[in-house]
Length: 380
Image (cartoon, rainbow, N blue to C red; front, side, top):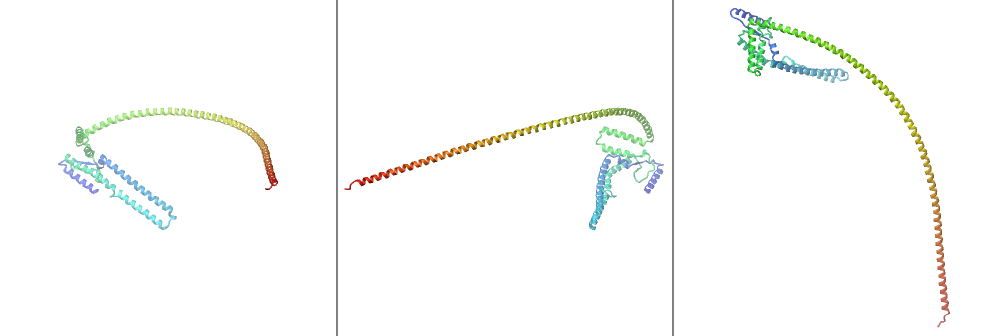
């Protein structure tokens, strides 16, 4: 770095010496400032930062997992054998080594982040170098330095800063397709005016005076605006305070009304509870009276049922006796009829026997008579 600074001083001294006979035109750019103001670079840088954040989260997750493994081993060490302890320690060491390698792969000197940054910035740097070369050729600059490089610049006047011109050229190149011819012409005229002001010290001084007056007017307008905003703010605060006070009063009124409603509700609840208790007691008395009445009716019904049952039992018994008597009479009648039928049959039998005996006797008598008659008849 010191050698570069000495080289810069040598070039500057030579240029100033040579400038006694010929004017030396020097300019500088701020590469970091330019990159920060290029939309495409800013967008790509944000995407790269999101990717880097994701990598950091992955590293954090894996680091937490290793910490959990260490804590678990610490808690279980007394319960494990030496072989298991050695195996778990080897696993932890392996994961720590993998995490370190992953960290170096992503964020190391030759890691993905550095490579992606280089890939991201190189096309824009190439564009910037091309624009600087064109500026040097078109504006006849002898030297154009990079303020953000290792070269130390103890002082640099803003009039020699070409960074905005480079940014404008980059932006114009990006917007060229979007601008109409008229817009492009107006933009070129504006850029030419700014370049003329930058290259002409007197015009720059006049522009500075105009800018100072403009700034003064803007400051006065800003002060008036600030004063108006302050008044507006005070009025709004007063209004806000008034509204807050009204809100507080309204809140107090609402709270009082709410308390009154709550008290009324509580009183109504107590009244209803009292009525409910009285009604419950009345219902209980009525239920007990109804129960007693039902019990009495049940007792009377029971007695009536018992009397009816006894009457039915007596009637059944009387009926049974009547049926038994009828059965006995019928049995006696049947017995008498049977005996009469048996006697009639016996009499009929005797009558038949007598008749048969009489017939036999008559036959026997007839036979004897015939025999007697035969005996009395002479034999020839």
